[in-house]
Amino acid sequence: MAGDGMLRGMDNQLPAPHVALVDDDPDVGTSLRGLLRACGYRVSLFGGAQQLLTRGLDDIDCVVSDVQMPGMDGLTLLERVRASASAPPVILMTAFADDHVRMRALRGGAACFLAKPVDAEQLAECVRLACAGPD
Image (cartoon, rainbow, N blue to C red):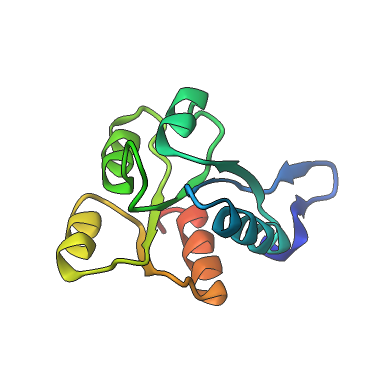
């Protein structure tokens, strides 16, 4: 359960889903990391898309990324993640949302597309659904 941090069973414990948060604004990243941790997720914060890709995606359950960043942008990150073997779901967010960017993101396979400032409940719900996987 998202609020528990750990899913508890009689004999075992499953770790909380691991979210990779990518944002070049340290204040936004720190704020969103706190929000997601409060929902019970393990969160790794990255200052750029290349940092995440260099680290690897093997134990990542969901990626939450800003779209507009220096270097590799969020749309390119989405393409790279979707092409990877593990391919966790990707949620994109931006302060500069327009219909063209939104359509590119969703056609490219983004699980959610959110406008900044991000609504906390909406982000939490998108991450919950993305980590739950397809029904």
